[in-house]
Length: 553
Image 1 (cartoon, helix red, strand yellow):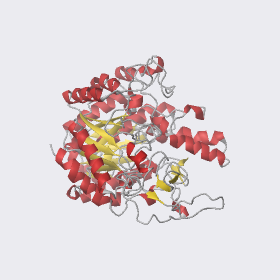
Image 2 (cartoon, rainbow, N blue to C red; image 1 turned 45 degrees about the vertical axis):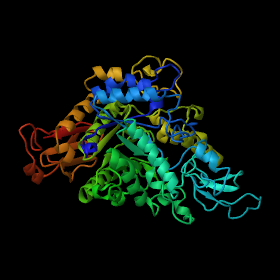
Image 3 (cartoon, one colour; image 1 turned 90 degrees about the horizontal axis):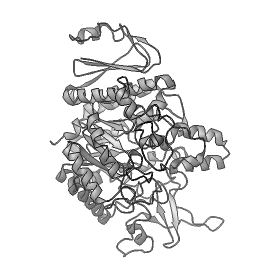
Image 4 (cartoon, rainbow, N blue to C red; image 1 turned 120 degrees about the vertical axis):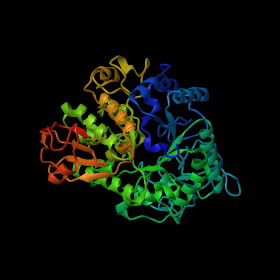
């Protein structure tokens, strides 16, 4: 089916934290294999695996040292083949994370590149630039003022080559040179190889950063703390994506979803409108920034619900207008747990998780469910920085404390925002280490696991797990929830998000911690438009409970 991605319900697995099969404290492919029956019972039909390639793990696998292998922590190619076969037997497609903007500095390509200059065949596989002079201490001066997303300069001096190389992330993640056609062909062949191995699609890490601005100009000081705003969307980005589509996606019928920091809804269709033959969909970030303060991602602010609703609606409307397709997500391996961000009342976290399920599975687009989201896993607040592993978190702590911030204040920000919130082990049951491993887990288990776990959720009919299951079944059996038009309905009450799918599917979501009267919520005109035998907006709709979502059809 050419557009199978439109009916996909994707479940994202972070392999290191999903299920450990051999007691070494690290999740692996055999562990995932052992849980395919659970995934099938949830109702999902597509599995997304974060990177499983060999890597020194400076950025937990997003620093790839061999694109065609399997990290020994996760198993081997035979384990991968067995997992692929098991998934296919259960009707579950597989998409892999593909990191094409940068590799590890331990990749053979970089090892060759750092010791040679043209005409060596690897000399231009990465982005090299000479110093523009020396400072007062005789240290080489970088080509421009670009900063790494993980902090510090985006340039690293290489003594062997006596040049700087560009790294938009960790200094151990040098950026590949997409201007070099040999590099592009190497990466295309990597994707083709995995497609031949049975992979159905690819999630493309920071794919809109692969084209750099010519001349590497300095950026205004105001943008230095928002680097994705000046790294993204270089002059050849659409040319490169069209080539990737032509060389890989089209021949294999592969699904493609691009992570695109810095892209707003007005530009989104340029990447994923069908006639452009680039990507099937992209991950936007607008809606994930509504609790950022003026200082950006490490400056937590009050969650702005009305802004959240407006952004979601605008993306829905723009994609409908320009023929694009939405990806629907609020959690992944890079985001803190969403219910901990939007709901401050501990007693309502389960209700909030069910509300999020209703949102994701009734908007127009492909929903992405992150592991543990379906049982309402929440943030974890480690008391010591020593318990954190994420490089971005550790860099932020170091830089902030060196700048004079109180360690307790930095930890408060980290408790709210750290990517490690999403990377704690999956909570399977209430046994030691949440049933994730018989050994010592690579990162501490969340203290919530005795109560919040799959085993408990299976028997609790009010758990978010059952909400997800029922909504996945509804979505996969009702074409209106796939192709039906989205239309937002103005609410007379704050914190309420209401919309129609098609003409007769009404969704009303209450993001408040109080009951909301909705008898007259949507006005007389809507009552005339919408009615059914089962429920209607002029039927028995006295109140919506706190953090409750309802569907009327």
